Image (cartoon, rainbow, N blue to C red; front, side):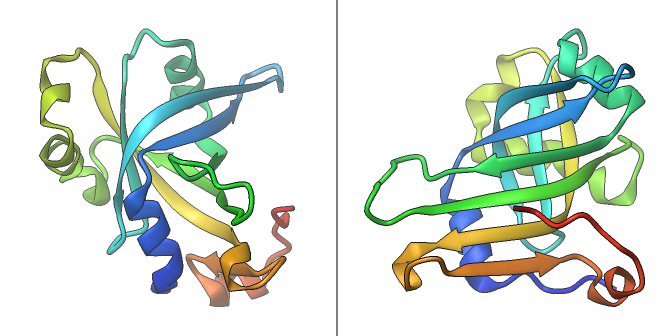
Length: 157
């Protein structure tokens, strides 16, 4: 069961454009990359474009588990906001990946001329820090709250 994303989280992710995504290679070494994304709040999905020849693409094809962050496009150090997330890359033939290209190019039409593939990142866990709601305010979200209560999942810090 998909739990609706808190409106503050959706609004924040819809307004931003760039994420840092981290993956782990076969030797257990972490690797991070940045990407422009489009957020699909209805499905809790980030779409991004990247070349299959990029190093992170080869990692993601073998290990689709990811973690990442999203900071405001324009930082205000007095009003700290940001997202930490965990998720997984979905295969291109997954039902939720079907509208990836249309969604991405609708928001970024110039990207159509840039070589690469559109990837679908399903977000499973989010911690949203929003100090504009009071210092240290955290809004958590989990894709499947019921499932998570039965499993020990690592907590975002």
